[in-house]
Image (cartoon, rainbow, N blue to C red; front, top):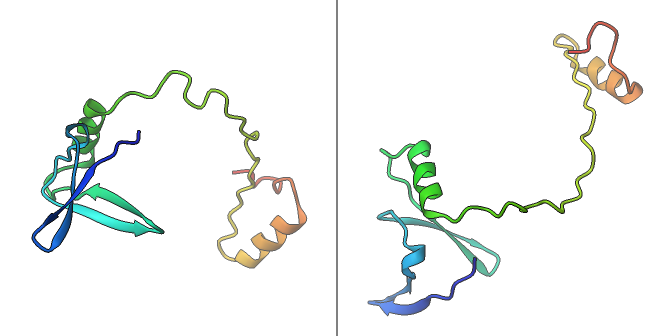
Length: 108
C-alpha cells in the first residue's frame, strides 16, 4: 500500500502528517534510515506483549488476497544432513565434505 502524506514544520523539526488509515497506536516511533528511505515503526510500550500487538495488527490491517504467492515458483526443499560430532567437530566438517548420505546410525 502506498499513500502520500504531507510534510510540515513543527518548530525547528520536520513532521509528517499521517492519514487516518495509517495512524499509529504509540506515543513514540523508531526511525531507521535505509538508503534514501525511512523505516518508521511504532515503539512498543514495555507493557504490551507481542500477542497484543499482533491482535491489533490483524484487526487494523487488510487481509492478504487468497491468491497471494499462488504463482510463486519455489525450488523444491533441500535435503539437509544433520550430524552431531560433539567431541570432534572437525570430523563432522570432513564428513559433510565427503559424503552426501548420513552416516549409518547417525541419521538424526
